Image (cartoon, rainbow, N blue to C red; front, side):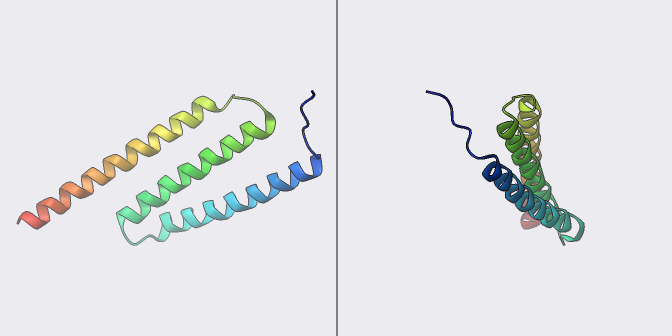
Amino acid sequence: MACNEGSPIVKDLVLIVTAVILSLAAAGAIYRIAVGPSLLDRVLASDVLLAILGAALAIDMAVNRHLNNLVLLVALSLIGFIGSVTVARFVADRRGQVNDS
């Protein structure tokens, strides 16, 4: 049984819709990085931006049926996770020092 790839029109429509959604989400994250009143807002927005970039890479790999960006996707995920954990620990340490004194 042959693999049915579906209609190219539907595939292009889905690709356009996902590109628009990811672009709007990226614009919102960039706005929050620029405006965000606190450091935590900016860090969270940068983590969201990394997740959006990872989603775009995954969509590209799915549409074009390749795994060329897999190493980049894993590296982005690790950088986002380690960065978020580091900032969360830093903020928790600072809040602990403020409450102790």
